[in-house]
Image (cartoon, rainbow, N blue to C red; front, top):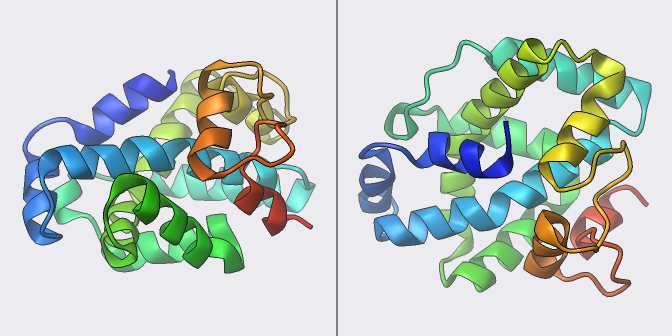
Length: 186
């Protein structure tokens, strides 16, 4: 499993165009929001694995969403909103604003799209964890691998998706971690 395959699974079929209609966006704009947001969401989840309780909570979330339907047009925005609040914490508004600015959308559209994909993203990551037989202690490495790094530390700025992650949300100290995500754990 890699980030491109996750993006492909989340954006397959007509659901992206249906979601575009729901949020008054084109399918390409919906794809742009999803593509720009995934490294940030995965990076925030990786930050959550820094503590045993955070990793255990994330593993439970993965397990509880493994059976979720992969249909953006019928996703529970309420459930997704709760997931985003857990993943992003108090900085969710800043993340939504930065993504809206980057993708030429507005914060309500970003919030809605991310709320729709959040349960499915957890389900996909849960399936990846299960199929790779990765325990709670290996979640940081699983998520780091998706971002271009393999350790429990966030991806470095040495190119690839780590650079995309930093570039999408601002990375003043060039460590590959968006400033918004770094602020969540300080």
